[in-house]
Image (cartoon, rainbow, N blue to C red; front, side, top):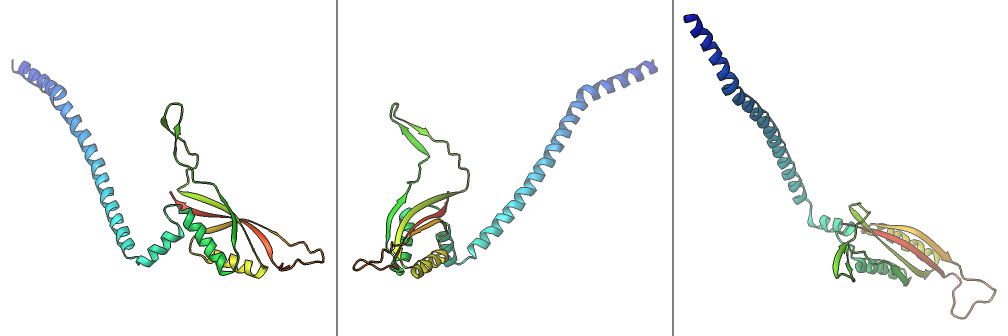
Length: 197
């Protein structure tokens, strides 16, 4: 009889382990794995917070005048009128009037469908984090003034790329019209500036 009770006790112990303890053990094992994942995420979060605090401290340490210069170098909006006025100001320093300004308006991200009176989102293929604004214009002046204009445009605080330059030399037929200077050339330029989206 003792032998039967011993075997019965062993079988009950195995059944309790299989049906009672084992599922809890598996849950504890899963929870331990979750704890490791959460501790890693918490550690990463703490490191990111320290990095953010360091970057904020560095940003706050930058002088306001330098921040203003950086905003002018690469603004967060296109501000096309201000850009055109800036080019005109530089050209006027060299007595070179700006004429025939051409540019395409900035495209909006959504349009209105007239047939259904609903707003339709336009999918942009440009995934760059910055926008490009291009203008074309003409100006007149002598060659030396034009070179100085380009140097001032190059050293201007706002980022500007000169994409194309063409010029027209006055036709010298042996006769110079009254009041016409043979050293004045007509220049056509295409320039681009950038802005953060």
